[in-house]
Length: 163
Image: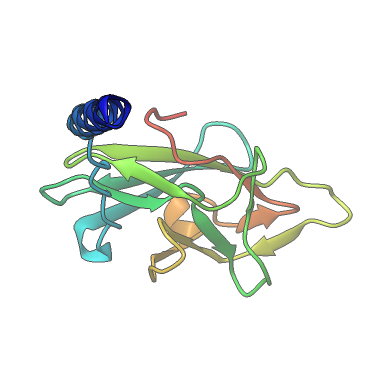
């Protein structure tokens, strides 16, 4: 009977230690970070300007909302009625990019021409997120009266500084 009592006491002690460890571990676990919501298109403004270097455009998206939100880290840039969009460089998959309230993010679109294959479009479409309609900008408004030259266009990912 003495052995049984010792085992029971040891079992109770082990159970108490497990409960204490469990309570301590749960107290140390931090709750998951609150997800930053996707930006509502109405809270964003987009601006496209011709960069000082040839065949480059600078994109700026500004979060005019009151809280931080996310856009896709790859700007969506389309060219006139051509199929497809500028591809990201460096190559990347879609994912969220956080834009704090009242701040801007920047990207650059490069369309290096190859004379034999270059195409010219009269307008481009830019959206901060593929789920958004974005804006359509004419080549003339960018100071490019002959149009935007397009050949294998690439875009950088959104970033915190203007190029």
